[in-house]
Amino acid sequence: MQEKDIQLQENGLGTGSMRDDDEIEIDLKQLFYEFRAKILVILLAGFLGAGLFGVYSKVVMQPVYTSTSMLYVLTKETTLTSLADLQIGSQLTQDYKELITSRGVMEQVIENLGLDMNVRTLERKITIENPSDTRILNISVTDNEPVMAKAITDEVASCASEYIAEIMEMDPPKIVETGEVPLYKTSPSVKRNTMLGGLLGMFIVMGIITLGVVMNDSIKTEDDVAKYLGLPVLAVVPEISAQGQKKASRAAAQDGEAASLNRGSRKKNGKGGRS
Image (cartoon, rainbow, N blue to C red; front, side):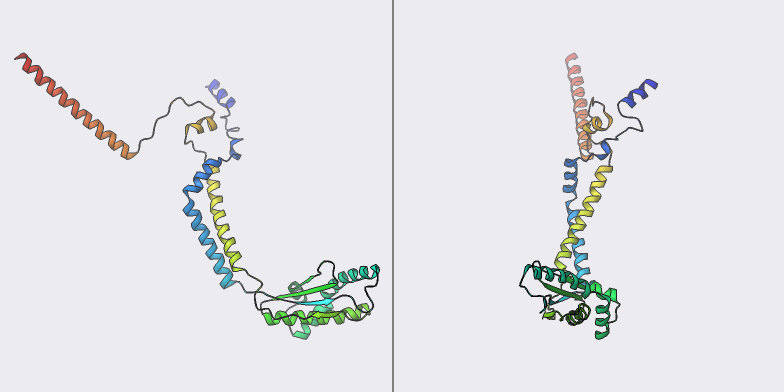
């Protein structure tokens, strides 16, 4: 028994070393067959995920609208007569971006419009962008109501222009363009969320199937014997189904009847020869 235990441990069958390397292996061919066998389940999960995400985006999620106004950074004091003026314009753009969302501007907007929100909430609604190689600032505001989105972006541009002129002691930046009432919502995108829901549903089911294949260490073929146990296969006993067993039983019964008839006919022929 000791020699047998030592031999098993040398072949990698010890409890501490069994399948240390094989646990991270995935049989892609077997995984493909599992996916193909459960393709209906995967597709069903995709349809369910797409339906759930689509309904949630359409019914539960509130639509968001975006309105944008524009400010021009350069004023009378900052002309475009030299490279230094261009650099000043770029620096002012960064200063304006910080001043627009400052507490003073946000509080003034909330007071003028009578908004039921705090400074932090209003600041999260505002996005400021500076198109490359320009001295223009785009002030975008998102809200669940399209009319309110326009009102907020216009008020932010107006208050920011006055605040910047007061702080920097210069002419107020010019409002190039006021916001418009958006006709179409910015988010959520029902089509995109529906597609993402379908993909997520299929990925979840495929992940579960993959986990089942990886965790399944049962021996099914003669190749698994050599793979997991490191032992040669000496013989293979074919598996016979229930229908095959019935056919085999019928064939054996028929062979038995035929053999008994042959024995009976031989006995009769033997008696006839003696007489």
